Length: 216
Image (cartoon, rainbow, N blue to C red; front, side, top):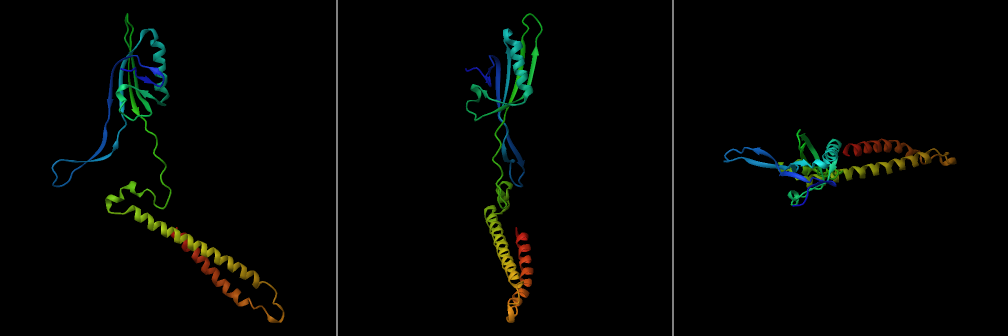
């Protein structure tokens, strides 16, 4: 049996190690169903409970090392034969207790509870209603994928409207610039009628922009 270690610290006088794994279930009662339906929400962190003694010749230094690690509250690497089949990367010291027996032997007993500390999940998808499946819409009869496609099409249409509105406004600005030129001699200003229509186009362009923003 290999010596259990917390980071690079060896737990030499271990008396017992217990490993626990609990599942997170919600119990659902179904009318007409004998028994109870268990809906799994995931798995609780693996836990390891260690009881041991500190060797008398190094008890003071070993106790300080364990107390410092427990007080820091940081993730540690734990290795032991009992966790060989478990995929555990990091753990935290959830609880630490020490007890000194006064007497000739002057032994120091300790107990440590370690809990698995899994890595954070990847960031949530940033898109139109991304990640709806995580809210269980599939169970409610909604096709989250199809809904996301429709919303994506609407967002694309809104972008097209905004682009068209911007192009129209650019054309209006150019017409206004031409209309502000001189009367071009005896011909008058042939662009004056276009300038009048430009005012109407500007109102339409503003409305299109408002529609595009509303859709987004």
